[in-house]
Image: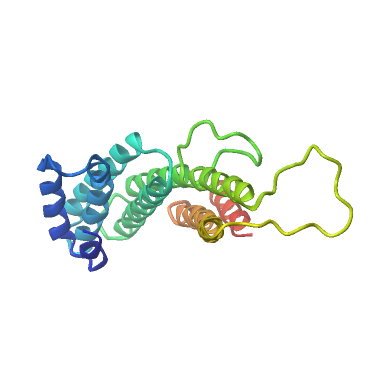
Length: 239
């Protein structure tokens, strides 16, 4: 299934996913992934669809599949990917409305209003709401999902390294190196890789938020107060 996705054989992936859902012998963990994988495949099929109305139907279905997945799995690595996919999907839909508004005979005002709605929804699903050092009680967006995972990996990394506060008086002289087993060294390396990857994802997510604000500006009246505020938000996020 992973190889089919890598080769972008979306139609075949959809067929395989349908078989997986019906197969009683398939693991529950794999079945849990079906909605997200189906959404990804649907987005893949939309790339060859030229009819805007049919593309909208595909996007609606993909959006619902992502929501179904996130309802069951709102946290973790796959949830991060799902939130990101949903954000990307909403930005694509907003762009499509902006382009449609440029065509002669179209209701530009209505289409740009719809585009704004998609961009706002993308920002909501991507942009974090939790302040630094604040406890994350519930994850509802990509940025908070990344931060929650990053905090967990960082905490585990400190534990494996042995970076724990000591109740004893601090030792004088150079700190003795911590002796670790081969398994602990391997675990440490894995955690450091995960931490680095999550740090990259956090930056990427914040850049996506900045891009969503920039895209939103294209659906607003140039030089209007809302346009200026949106451009400023985009610029602030890019800093």
